[in-house]
Amino acid sequence: MFYSLGRYILLLRLSFKKPEKFDVYWKEIMREMVSVGIGSLGIIAIISVFIGAATTIQVAFQLSSPLVPLSIAGKIARDSTILEFSPTISSLVLAGRVGSSIASQIGTMRVTEQIDALEIMGVNAPGYLIAPKIMAGITMVPLLVIISIVLGISGGYIACVVSGDITPADYLAGVRDGFDGLTIRVALVKAFVFGFLICSICSYQGFYTTGGALEVGQSATRGVVYSCVMILFADLVITSLML
Amino acid sequence: MIEVKDIHKTFGDNEVLKGISAKFEAGKNNLIIGGSGSGKTTLLKCIVGLHKPTKGEVFFSGQNFSELSFEERVPIRTEIGMLFQNSALFDSMTVEENIIFPLNLFTNQSKSEKLDRANFCLERVNLKGKNKLYPAELSGGMKKRVGIARAISMQPKYLFVDEPNSGLDPKTSILIDELINELTDEYNITTVVVTHDMNSVMGIGEHIVFLHQGQKWWEGSNKEIAHTDNKELNDFVFASKFMQAAKEKL
Picture 1: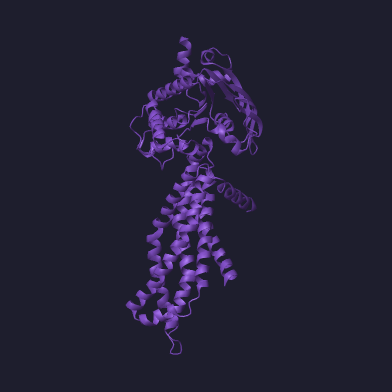
Picture 2 (picture 1 turned 90 degrees about the horizontal axis):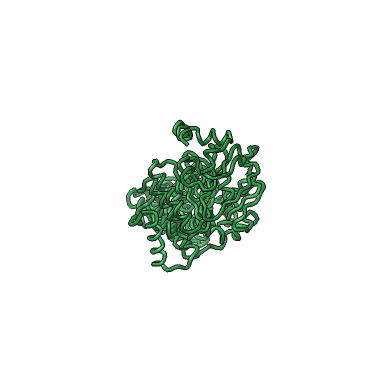
């Protein structure tokens, strides 16, 4: 475990060495941002709307008491979405979608000697392959999480309109009630850390792939599993530190 | 010129290279031959720096490559071109982008200069007009030729070729060998080819190093190879009935 941790840290150090030519790396960063950000927008939109809607209905069901104002459901749904569902669930989904793609892409490049070809040319392969992915991860995951929050809360509103468990007015009143900006800061810190974890762990798994197609698949699976575990661990740490 | 001195390489308990020394001269096709598992590719990877030798040194034009850091190696690496066994083309890039890639990173050439160079390299390997194709759209022989075009794009002083004929039909193999031979003569490159293809050995083997069980077993030229009394080399070279028949006619 310590051997892997040391190798992971050394790989990250190599990844952030001075690039050979900045404009080549800049193009790579833009390409990765499109892949991570635009490419994941659809799935993030779908899960956010449904999770927001389901959360609102469940909270309304649990608080069905004449002593509790219905607007509380909106408040709880809002904070749950901002603090937990949008950053964590979105990142777990992104670990599957983006992480497996990163690990298999770099793993395939390793087993087909494309990484050797980069090194022979004098290119810092970790820098060229991994740094742009991490940069894309730490910028696009927070953006996706912001979109997810908006869509999650909108999903809750749609659920109110469709199900009628709470009136839309009560829901909106709850959403507006006692908003604390700290929750958004926590969500963005989580998104930043999760984006870094997904891209760096999956890149590491891909970069040290040996063998052939079977091992590339195994690297992708390991990358996703380790990313998910580390996301949940980091979620706990950030939550306990910031709240 | 490239010189390797007493190269050893061990993987775990397995000593793959056992003290190999050799000189590879400029303007010559230097072939490293040997049976499967003899250490040919490991030696090549030690020379280019993909493997760190357990012991020994590699000199490029007198400069000790083995003791240089990654950054210090970059100027030498930009003078190295390499064709990999499976071509190792970047499959997310077109043929043209593959060739231009090292130019983008290590030169300040304008876009038109880079395109001219890519076109020249493609023309040199008889692939004119294939700029926009992706590696997946190319045949094995075409991939090899694009690999050579990428390898020569930076006008290398050293060309390394790993199994250039693997997976190719005999006619395409000869074309690739001829191309390597022409480029070596034309640009006075130090070419090191790892192969076990006897057509290549007889066709372009100006200087041959035969490896057996991780050791240098024999060294000479293709003219000398047919008359050697080295048992292991004879077993390797004349393993096929075709080669045995050819030897009898010599």
